[in-house]
Image 1 (cartoon, rainbow, N blue to C red):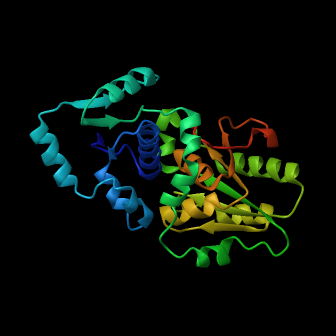
Image 2: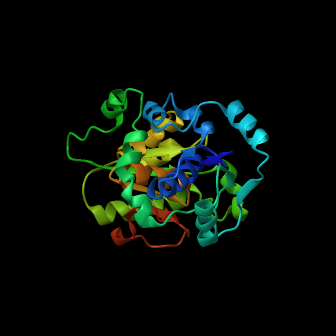
Length: 264
């Protein structure tokens, strides 16, 4: 049995870390437990059916009584070693971010994860408010990531409004059809009127993380800086995304793809 002791990072990272280990265990007939995922059971009730465990305290007690050391996924590009050790081990307790199942393994279980991460909340109000397209509008999700991105990696993926506006305009020109733009952001004082004056049909989603994940996953295109938030939305909704890596880049439709496990 493989037990994940700790979830890494925030919500989207938790999901990605979880399914990479889970998919490997499914493919190899190994029992997998991750009791810390129980904090998401209310949002995604189907997770309960996977028997990942409920008691974090019970997990800690079992770990202490086992006298086993913790196995760390703390080295990038070390997958061959990780897989060998997990297959050879017995009742292993693990933590860390760098376990990556191959794309073909992750892709095999996409239907499973779409079902396990089916929202338990009523999505109809979100559908009615944001996803209606009376004139055939294409739905474009734009993730404006600010806050911690100003410092993370020296601000490499922190972009000002003019960069987002430029990329939105490029995408609209390529699509050449009516569109509604849904903005998702962690910035409290976003200049929404600036986007509306430029593009007209622009709305701001001020919903919960789970609701934003759902909304973004139901759009036709996702645009934003490198982020596991958009990667997860693309994966779970099979929605095409493109990450902005440079403020001066030119966008093409061929750059948009669905995340099927090849996260980076």
